[in-house]
Length: 416
Image (cartoon, rainbow, N blue to C red; front, top):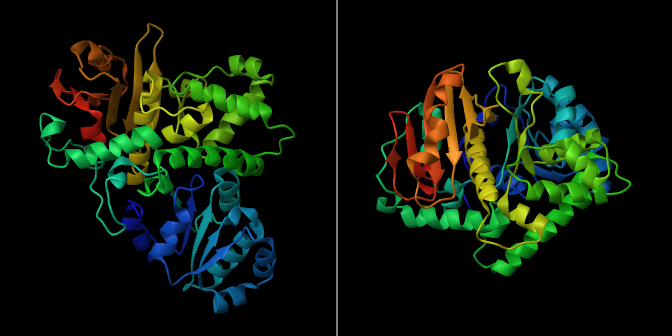
């Protein structure tokens, strides 16, 4: 079992005066239930998926919850909104209760939580495993922050060897990266007893289950076929700027429906929509976003492919989503953008912090050149805050410094 970054912080949260209710959400099979069961084995576990059991718990009064079940894990809580009201009532009346609520549907769960538990809970999101988590061998192992996470949390990049090949733990980092770029980050696929064939079969089953359960939870579809087509089109176009009108024509629905479908993909943690950056903040929401599939294993399953060699666009999504997951773990105030100007300047990923920007160009090449950084070298002149640091992330094991702020570095070294 792999160690999880969240486990190092959640116990302190739950024991704080304002953390008596913790809400965990994230894609199905990211390990939410396993995580909290391991951390809180003295909590009663209640699955809301069982309709018979569900009705019994909804009949309990607040005083009965307090007396009989003062500490509990409630799984798939979004399936019974009345239980959220019960937990709210117990929370408001007694200080010694502790509850952990789990749900795989962000759209439904967040709506219910915001309506009933606003100001009463801590919300945690659990994503597929990151590279540092994949490097671990046991639940108890300490997770080292990647250089990226150290940069984000401290404001400075740690001292690194001039080549990732020189680092003592390079084999461990490379093994984690290879697994990630073959099968993605879902915990079930790290089981060493599984064959590669079994891993790909698991991913295919996951995609089918997602369509049959999560999507039907999010929306009432008479016909799933248009959504399935959109899923496949957007998987092919991962890391591309979205054109809702073009997709609508291809699948035979309106552009408004396409935007709803894209929201479902994002709300179920299957993809992230990266807004376009503009110096005028009011214009950022009106520009077309880039879409990145959250997990490369799932993307392969959607496209019915089995390839350890991602395309250039797929490689960009692999790196962008890993950066996204790692930064989300740190719970820092970061805004994510892509940048494309009228004169053709493109930046794959722009991170806005209160103090300035970090910029990333992502190249699949094994040998970076100064030309790979040309967009970064002239970026600062168009930004409204300082450019703190700029990176070319690639498969090149060597570092290359292009100016005081711009460096090319191995993706394995930066994210491992």
